[in-house]
Length: 485
Ligand SMILES: Cc1ncc(COP(=O)(O)O)c(C=O)c1O
Image 1 (cartoon, helix red, strand yellow):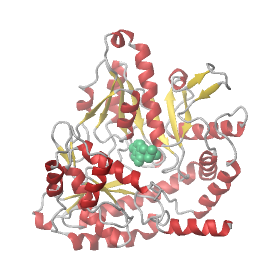
Image 2: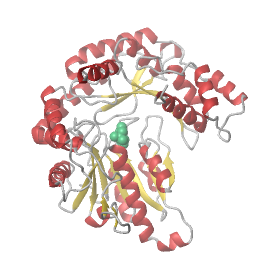
Image 3: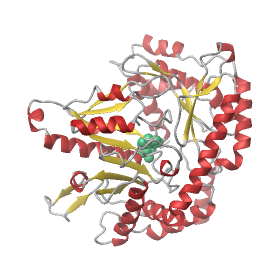
Image 4: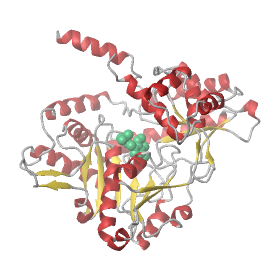
């Protein structure tokens, strides 16, 4: 019986993109050390029945959290005044950083609140979407600052927008879409001068940059940095469901908590968003950190750095394709070289589709028109993990061959389909409902998405559609996937 249940699950899993081996350059973080996965599985299994809700009943939870928070704090140069929590992932860490800053801003600006001023969340346009989600959930105005076409933001463009209503300024180390390290020193210094909190989103790079060479200071060494997030389920190589959020100062950390004795049940104290929660990913991350220590992380990071250097070298040899900006850390973003005639250009989405055909998955990122009308070009993101070092020669070859195969091919164009959607009367002020969204998706040939399906057309459509329409279509797509048949 159990055998057949697990057999069915194995069948289902066989349709997934491979999580190990380095052929998927996004979503998954393979250290290349199977013994680390085995250790993580054993630790997760030991902690499986535990409820992370209450460390007074399950003190192992607090003990593992202390160790993890201590490890990350040392890595990012926090002193004893830096404290924090283990959360369920990057998004939860970002959400809590924003909620905390908003609550403190309200407490510290009673006059502005009385005048009806709304708190503002200031961030480069490349800040992770989790911050838009936070602004929406916690009722702040999201103020994205345009970046250059290379994905880099100018410190001054953020600084001029700092004012009393800014509850938090966010910078990334590095930003996911571009791989760029934001100008953290200048932004944090200006924020400190004006009494504005500054969050470093190191969800992606927080467990790599401490061991990467020649990185400008980006963490708690900078006095203006008031909080920082680092994900253990990314370059901490733990299974999904674990991140760390650190605050400078106990007062700020405590503002993150929700506590109530105002109901007839057990007293509730939640440092994070969830109530009952698994301790499995926490235990897995704890075990991995115990095993790797500083030295292990340094070795894995060195491997990622060699992969990054090798791929940048390769891209330099590929006509029509360039690396966006000057990435720092474990991400590289590829864009078409606009300095060569279009017949020599490599469209990054055609490239990504061609690579998928050859068994390598890089991530499509649609072109993006910013609030000032300037454009960040469509691109393809590569997350570089240690395991890739073993097959980097194959990947480099595949990249070159895929580029040769698509060079000069016209990029997918979503204008015709987007025009049809508009002709049906849909736009920013009229979003299709569920049935109409589903019909449109099927017309666009995007009613079903398999891991190796070409995505260039869907991405081109997203680029052309008004954002609320694209968001409705994509929500419909995902919702239908999980609907019982
Ligand atoms: C910089 C950054 N912040 C936040 C997040 C959100 O993390 P998660 O997907 O774990 O919720 C990511 C995810 O890629 C990220 O790269």
